[in-house]
Amino acid sequence: MSITGTDIERARQLLGRGKLVAIPTETVYGLAANALDTKAVLSIFEAKNRPTFDPLIVHSYSLEAIRDFVAEIPEQAVLLAEKFWPGPLTLLLEKKALISDLVTSGLSTVAVRVPDHPLTLQLLRSLSFPLAAPSANPFGYISPTTAQHVVDQLGSKIEYVLDGGPARVGIESTIVGFPAGVPTVVRLGGLQVEDIEAVIGEVKTTLHSSSNPMAPGMLKSHYAPRLPLHLLDREEMESAKPTDATGFLFFQKPAHFDTYPQARCLSETGDFREAAFRLFASLREMDQLPVREIWAEKLPDRGLGRAINDRLLRASVRNADSIHE
Ligand code: TXA
Ligand code: MG
Image (cartoon, rainbow, N blue to C red; front, side, top):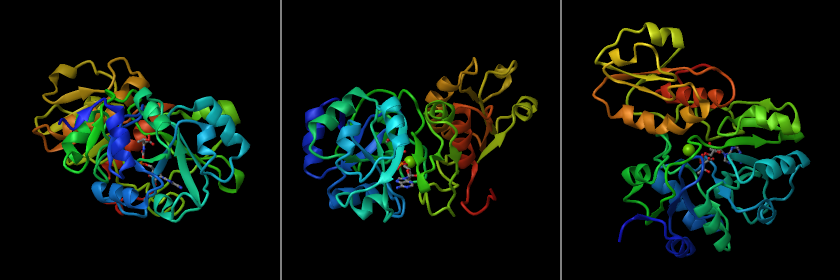
């Protein structure tokens, strides 16, 4: 039997038996298990080779359903959930005892989200439990945006990949917490900070690092390709000499694009959404090129451009301790 398909019933049965199933979402594919089954959750960490100090996101189908496992929801969180769920937004909320410490790495908050994908929403509605799901990639590597990406890297470790086509948004959800009641973005992602601020006013942004215990999993080195990656300004990219040894990842198409032996561009017209949609697949593709390194163009630092730059910056760090923020 093929490991990929659109059989929700099969996914439902496997998950009910404590097995792992990869699920499509609008951001990236997730590696899902029953969030209330500790053994099943443990197998997520094992399959990804992920340290257990890196907590998981719990997925459900509605704000109402999420009330079953969170203790309280600040008013601003309700406003955001009502406006952006289903969608690329994760909220950090105080957990109920039902959610184990394994899921939250011992933190008192649980990360929750309602993903915007018809297959996964239907699956979630058919289950009597929520799904814990990190991105379905080996720990530290580029997140998967197609079912094939998941099969290529974790195929031997999971029973089924629910194939929902290429992920529409292409980068992970934006994570918002409420430490001391202050809305705080702790991971930039598929929902622009500007859109959040339009609903609840100005928010703080505390971008996480390996030394920030509030966000233990947000390591400086992450989303990393095999090849060394360097992040450059547009001017530096445009003045770089085309060479066989370097793969160039442009944001917009430069005038002399065809003179580069190995080059890709995220969006010919400079569209942030298109760039996010293509980011991880392009990085994977470039990682397979016969080059020694990748040079990537930094995007304008606004909207989704900020989230994409965040991913490129982390992809450029080889050693978590070698960069000073
Ligand atoms: O778009 C997404 O968010 C995808 C899809 C599958 O939903 N999921 C995803 O999960 O990106 P993951 O595990 O790759 O990233 C979740 C991040 C981790 O860096 C983790 O440290 C952080 O969320 N996180 C989870 N629970 C947290 C908590 N209680 N406090 C702070 N950070 C938390
Ligand atoms: Mg991840």
